[in-house]
Image 1 (cartoon, rainbow over the protein chains, first blue to last red):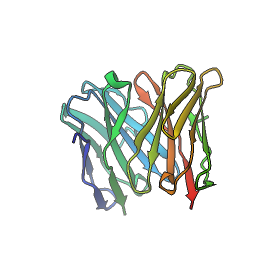
Image 2: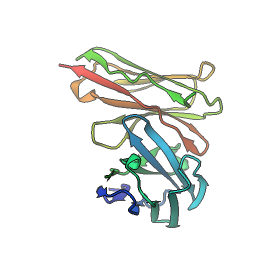
Image 3: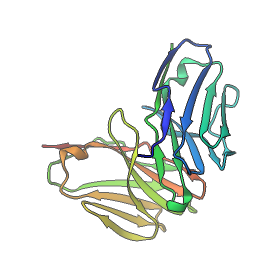
Image 4: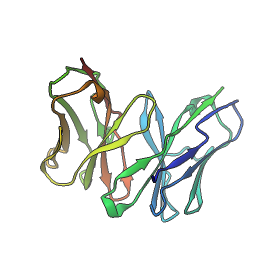
Length: 114
Length: 109
């Protein structure tokens, strides 16, 4: 059963600490998206990759956020330093444009910054 | 202006009724349109896609698209309590998926 895997599922940290979230996309998918979801803002697009290359990260606060895809099986989203306003659920999704653009979501990483 | 606009709801309908969910988008070059369902505490899951103007039916779900009006809708017939969730509209433009904030649907038994 192919699925997107995200770790950690839950993370509680203190302001100023570094947070790294990881995502394993579905094997064979060539696009990976990072979203952040809050009650106020809904699903915000942070960054996305195609064939491991970053195509757009304009939705991401550049001073503290970074996204990378070191290989086809791993995407990372890093926050350094973290702030309370970063508290949200972070979703990774992968897709294969050959099937019409459908995105498959991971279960999300719930981040709480105290 | 947000790329995707949806009424946040909640939209309450009785069991067995038709639920109508609406979405407008600002990007005229959007090619494909998707409806995702998200249960509380869960991740979004795809329920419908539509690529051309008109209606597309899949079981109890019908998606409607009008590109000239930049409008897409989702009808749920014979609504069930298990349909209670937030429904997210997502236009797709080549590389980007932008999601609306979603409409919360409550189906009352």
